[in-house]
Image (tube, rainbow over all chains, first blue to last red):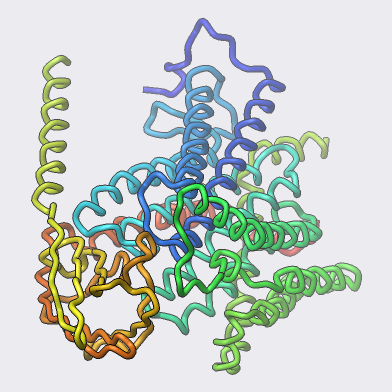
Length: 363
Length: 172
């Protein structure tokens, strides 16, 4: 049974302009949805540690779930339109022989579905094991990793198209990093694997920033992505305490006695990311100007960016306790930076629209 | 087709009943216990009783005459150091823990020290973990989404072979 058979005959396939417009709207709504989830998640973590008693129907939870629902509904809409209204296009991949859609929407859609299923499962889990507020509880791990899958789908969406837009890609990458890094660090902290926490910034940041540069072929995207990561960190740090104080007054609750006044989501994102990115950018720029070979320049840029990640209130505690780990972490960054660069090339080659546009330009 | 629908419908109701039954089976009541600290009686309230391993509950401490002007510390004997006891977040007239859970079953002793009044001991038993899926199984399911992403990336990588692409070694 081919995918084409399911097209609704009475509706005209979309024109190129319509297709690119509804894909653009879908990608922006997905980005808004994921930002809403990130914002709610950060607030929720702070709410649990500062205020405590909870029900499902808190404002931070509503942010988390409405953002995920928005992302899920967007993906569903794009998949249904692509499958049954539009004609097959090179950028679409088939799913279950019935549906077809751009790969990013498929990945993000599965992430949103996983989030919904693990969310329902989490509610049942609470009836068995009580209201656990640990982020590392088993259903929470499924919830959060599904959410990261949606973000990864979002990154793939912005890595597609005839012209990859550096700003939009950088925004989506920033949301992804701002969710993934604190979640990984907090999980490991709760599971008592604390010294291993140090590896996550070295794993994730050189990878994400090099991926951005490779996909867009513009090294300035590194600065945009790092700038947005830092901006989102700042928004959380400034907004959550104000919002928490306002919300507890509405509910008639109060802050815990032992409140540390710590915005975990910000605290777990390295403070000097812009400096780290600047080191990476300048090294790459120098390599370009001096015409150095690409691979060694990327190794150097990635490894140089790592030490700055540990000049931070949280991570410096571990770094000062184990300074010998920094060169090892720089090596980890070297590896993941190169991996990010190569995966960027993979994303470019998988982007059929870009290939078609480049072929046309070459003619 | 209708038969298939009814079968699915039946399966849905069976699943729903299982969920409701398992929830009811695990529904527990609150429980009060009184301990003596110096010359005062302290009412200890467990929000879920009996206490079960890995199942969270609230425990509050309410001394006769209230907590105004008093400070308290506590420790789980053999499990923790002494720490300051905070007021319960949603009821500031008592001290307490919200959403506390115990990893394993067995006997527990909590030593309550009301400064200037005296010390008292609360003894209770933590029962077996509620029957339910093991955390390991759920963790294994939970990592599936991210494994799927790795599989996708690996397949795309093998297809494109970035090491053989000129873009990998060029800035443009």
